Image 1 (cartoon, rainbow, N blue to C red):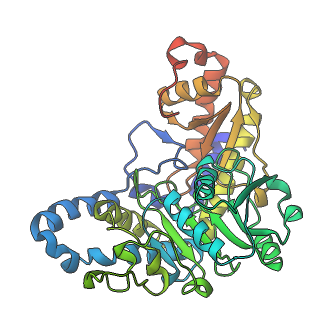
Image 2: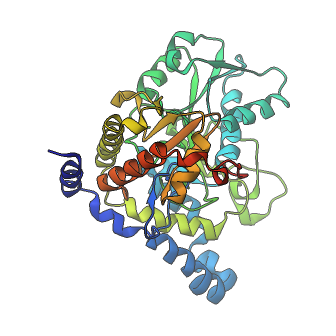
Image 3: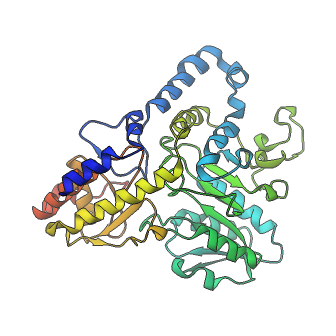
Amino acid sequence: MDILAQAQQLDSEDVLKEKRKAFSIPDNTIYLDGNSLGPASHAAQMAGQSVLDAQWQTDLITSWNVHDWIRLPRIVGAQIAPIIGAQADSVIACDSTSINLYKLLHSALNLQPDRHVIMTQQGNFPSDGYIAQGLMAHRSEVSLIYVDEQDIIAQLDESIAVLMLTHVNYKTGYMLDMAKITQAAHALGILVIWDLAHSAGALELSLDEHEVDFAVGCSYKYLNGGPGAPAFIYVNPIHHNRLKQPLTGWMGHANSFAFEQDYVPSDGIDSLLCGTPNIVSMAVLKGALTIFSDVDMSDVRQKSLKLSSFMVSVIEQHPALQPLELVTDMDDARRGSQIALAHPDAYAICQAWIEQGVIADFREPNILRIGFAPLYISYFDVLKATDSLAHIMQCKMYRAQQYQTRNTVT
């Protein structure tokens, strides 16, 4: 069977193929950057328009009650919960990933009064490290250490208070064994925080089953919530009434509208709230998440693996693509929903590819990063995108001056 026939057969067998119709992807565009910003969906667009036209404009401030704006963080959290393998009352949507990580780091350290070390992996998304460093500036007893992500368990010991890990490496796509690492950490009394930015919506997750302590994640990538969409927090039920988070804003108060002088935390996951929720963004996210309501995440994961494997197999058959070095571990158990190709001119190659209608992205210093969002990417998309990349490499199109200037956002 030739490669085109193989793509066509895979697409015909795809149980998720109808989901593509839910998205507003521009014509003549193959979108391989949903791991950075998911595309708009019709449901998200309608939800946003409804807030602006039928709610805010018409019902004004009464919308907090009439349209249940006040409960949106909980409602949206409950939508995210089954996608990450959690109970509905263990997830809440609010703030940004970085702010939520600060809340959890501070809270987890307070639960470990005799330990002061935060451990994370080398190559973790820099913002996670920045947040830990910022916390250290206010807590001189706390230290941060970086370890090899492929040898985490061997480097655990009883001095560590919190293990802060990103499940899928943002650059290479390397995926950690959540169940095994969490279990090993717990055996030494270590609390674990997982960053699910490159996992939620693309992988099959089981936070409750794996007894994860805490997790954070964004919703603008594979969950397609839109730029700046609210992030989310997961807290294992055993910790719900033990946490004392540092950002004690009025929305986390037990009775926000009592306007009491002193802070009294809400019970459970609501205590992780801080300020007024961003209603427009929250409503857009609520609409976007409806697409997942009838999706089996095991189907999403299987298609993700097949898409990336298919692209690698096509790359291997193109002589013009051999200068691109695959740096992603292709073992299914160690691969997220992306692949990374290294080349000294990766930025220029990416820009030339975008001009040809294939949108991927670049990560310093030399990584062409390709994301696979199974709800709207087809195998034919992958084949067509790879052929386009081969043309760019063969003609050395990327050497043109127009592709050399770096944009602010790379």
